[in-house]
Amino acid sequence: MTAPDAAMLAPAHALAAYMATLDGRHLDGLFADDVTIVENFAPYLFRDAARWRDGFRAHAQGLSDLKSSFGTPQDFGRDGEIVHFVLPTRWKGLTNGRAFEEDGGWAFVLVRRNDLWTIAGYAWAVTDFRFTKDARWMTRPPKR
Image (cartoon, rainbow, N blue to C red):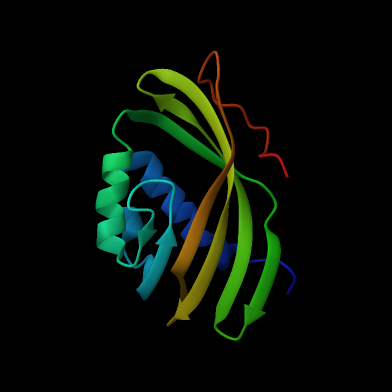
C-alpha cells in the first residue's frame, strides 16, 4: 500500500467536520487513549483529547462558515497497526466576519483499535494564510 485508504482518511475527515461544526459527535472514538497533538493555539502541545477540545473551542471563537478540502496525501508509511501520512489541507471561512483562506498540512499518526483507525497524534502547520475578498467556497485543492 502506497497511500492511506478510505478507512485511514476517515479520522481526518471526522476531525475536520468537528472543527467546522463543533459537533462533538464527530469526536466519538476519534482519538487513541494516548494522544499527542501539536496545534497553532495555546498551549500548543496537548496530551489529552478533552483539553485539546476545550482549547479548540476557545480558538474557534469568531470563526464561522468553515470548510476544508484535502490535497493528495503525502509521505505514507505503515508499520503493522500504525500508519503515518501528511495531508495537505485548505481551510476557508470567516474570522470575525472577515473572509480568509489558510493552507497547511496535518501530519497524522494513526493506530488501529479494533477495526477502526484512531488518531494517536497529529501536528498542524500553517503554510499560508490570507484574507480574501469573499468566503465563497471554491474547490481548488491546497498548494503542494
